[in-house]
Amino acid sequence: MSNPNKTTYLPGCRVLVPSVVPGLRAEELPGLRALAVEPLAVERLEFLDAVATAIRKHPRLGREPAAAAVAFWLRRSNLQTLAREFAAREGQEVRVAAGLALHITPANVDTMFLYSWAISFLAGNANIVRLTTRLSPLMLDLLSCLDTVATAQPAAWRGNYFVAYEHDAALSAAFSEYCDQRVVWGGNETVRRLRAVPLNPHAGERCFASKRSLALIAVSAYAALDNAARAKLADRMAVDIAPFGQLACASPQVVCWLGETDVGAEGRAAFAHWLETALAARQGAPDLGFAVNRLNTGFAAAAAGQICAMTHQPHETDLQALSLALAEQEEPCGGGLLMHVACRSVAELAAALGPAHQTVTYFGFVSEQVRDVARLLGRRGVDRLVPIGQALDFTASWDGFDLWDDFTRQVTVR
Image 1 (cartoon, rainbow, N blue to C red):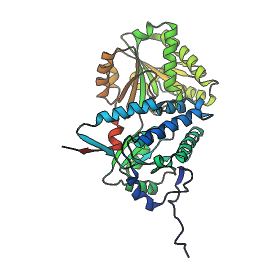
Image 2: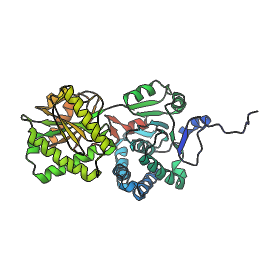
Image 3: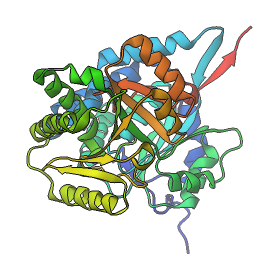
């Protein structure tokens, strides 16, 4: 005989934070949206600041660049900037939390789950955040910091759950039935699979699918740099490609040299030298697996007639593409591989881009030029133009969409 008092949790779903909760029950889900609070609640701002402090003080995370970036983004001064940005959106409309947000987060960018959740948390929502079951050491340490703060501040944490489960349409459907906003981060196949899962008809959805990015360097500006300036630029490029094995959507895989004349073999060699130096300083000993993968990719590109030259170094490999059309791989190699290509004009570059392109990092353009370039490339699909070194800087505006809009509702007042 079954025990009527026995608690039945959703099968296959493990609650990671708060760790004291053994599971989620289906009957709990309808009530979660009622736990949403006012946007920018003081206790939530203080909670995120406490998470930043916990990350900085963690014995391993303090030395991990991606975690340090999260802590820097969650610091009190940046939270206050986010609060001002949010307040500026309120005109005649009153903004309230969407209710319950469901986040499906990627496995290849270890910290994205925190950024997505933090914006929604600030917006006042209750949240269910689904993570991969194959958690990296970095993710485990970040979750440990979250759990510590959640235990210390249970009132501010109320209504938030970080869970892990395998690709399970039934579980995703159970959460989607009661959420008010679903956010999917992942590859194209992940997005297609989740879009097939029924969603509460009153809910909104935002999907962030596979994207690719590139760097745009003005040849004349680079040629004018001395060695110290070239080393500084290379270090900024290393900031964009070192984290996450260069597989984040915003990390450039292609370097486009813009000008009437090509930067030439000498210019590319100088760039490669300084970038290798910068990556070695940041990464230490080279990764043999990355190096072999880069070589294999280079040889395959040469066999396919895509490149005319290859330079291989311990931390990075440079391929010279024969044309813009041949500069991009179907599946990015990552691990320090860059495809270089010459381009005479921004219009020529724009013709080769499309909706799958996300970020263009740039060097050698003045502000007036950047806005003109943004208009031209943006019409083709590009979502972001940022200086080299800022590719991975997360903001509430991502892939051309405003997450504040996604995580709140506007109540019209007249």
